[in-house]
Image (spheres, rainbow, N blue to C red):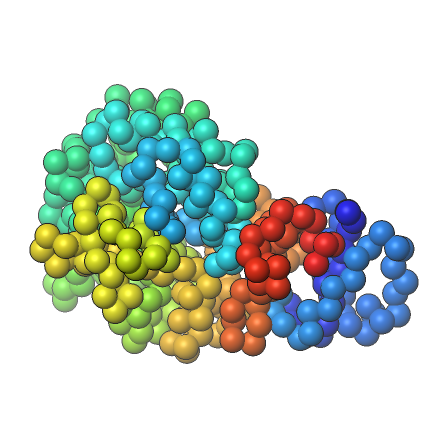
Amino acid sequence: MHSAFCIHNATVIAGYARMDRSAVLVEDNAIADIFSERRFAQKTFPPEVELIDAQGAYLTPGFIDTHIHGIGGYGTEDLSADSILEMSRILPAWGVTSFTPTIYPMPEEDMIMAIRAVVSAMGREPGAEIVGVHLEGPFISPAQLGVQRVEFVRPVDLGLMQRLWDASEGNIVSMTVAPELKGMRELALFCIRLGIVLQAGHTDASYENMIEGMQAGIRHSTHMFNAMSRLHHRNPNAVGAVLIQPDLSCEIIADGLHVHPDLIRLLFRDKPEGNIVLVTDSLKPTKQASDTPMFANDEEVYLANNLFYRASDGVIAGSSLTMVEGVRNLISFGVPLESAVKMASANPARIFGLHARGMISPGYRADIVLADSEFDVQMTIIGGEIKYSCAAGGTTGGAAAGA
């Protein structure tokens, strides 16, 4: 087993630039160097360095999904570390190298169990690495629930927040909140001191509420255009605030269904591209066998036209998107490939403070995706090890040099 390898003859989409016919050298699980194919041909490598010919394929940073409830029949609502580990195992096939399992509003004891399940799985991942917990609530607006369950939505409660934080052992990375709620400023200041990224979402906020939230440190937003107060010419509301304020970053679900492709083009035109983050918001039955009963957030759902709908009333329940599909969709909507990759890697890494991730740059973790001309994942490398290989027929566990 080699401890170093070099992938050459690749189109490197590094997260800051595109480099055609280039090579990436990995040593000790980190990016050691990037150089041209011409320099590669002139170099002499010691025998312990495995050479891998990319044959012109794309080499990108690993994708970071910062809003995901589940995949493959496993989800955070299972309250099980085993389910979180299965999510980790499945995700590299879709180019994901890091993720934040996202927890719905639930009874307090269940939220604590869900948080503890994620924390228990951290450090034991067979595939994509867990970088922390995303809480989607419970301090959200009953007027903008989406399919969140109203009985588990709560007014701001600092005592509850402290208990959730304690259960996480300091591993809550982000939290979706409604800026207009009473007591939100105190909650925001409490969370900012702990390093939690606050996201405006499931919110009925006015424009003024959003500006006040930004002042308190709420500077990211959850699934832009969805479950938030709509743009109005006399009150821009939450949607308008995200469009108007360049420093307010946002998630986007790029399935072409949650948000019309033309609106995604508008967002890309008007928003600094560094402040747009691709997410899946995928549900537990995403990529699950279609002949298996499907449930999300403990409610039966069905899949139609790539969306999940709640069986009881036909309301859209969520996404069946994967990150690589989202990147492909962004490209098809007219977003440049380099920008689409940044939205899936460099942007979330910067916004969530994930050190040495999200770019192919010397000193960064060797979290890498090899994708073909159609942007189908061929190989996913996490921390210098292959975690998925199309050629190997699925998930593997060896060093990348074994390719």
